[in-house]
Length: 161
Image (tube, rainbow, N blue to C red; front, side, top):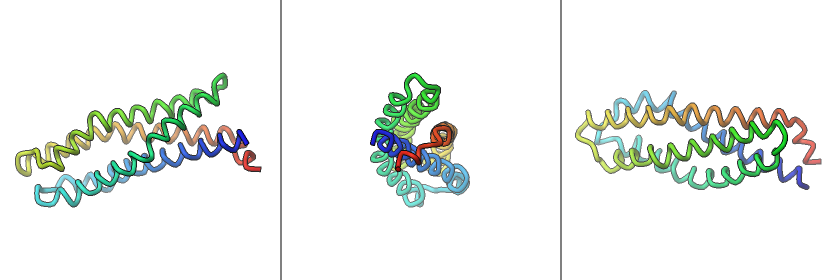
């Protein structure tokens, strides 16, 4: 039973890390290029709505990831797997810190129209993109650590039997 719960825990963290990394990759490769052309008239639909929905989604997904990361570290204490677990926990902590303390305030400025014309909007969005590059790298490293962990454990599926 313990192994099954640890498997579910690892898979939840993998789910959250995959969603986080996928969102950051979509932003960087598909949305950033179009956001350079946003105007004060269309920023709400093309920036405001997606960032609001993403914030709502990750507000539900991320807190259990902290618990999951702590369980990963605790369950692997004394083994080399603790290093991968610690990267997972540190990664979600960094991503949350950057998002909540640095990026969310910029989101609010953009959605609230706190910029001067199209040039001010473009400047704010470019700052937002540079800040999110931190989350792009951090989410990729966090995802790689949890994938490495799951693969290295290799008998996690045996926990289901």
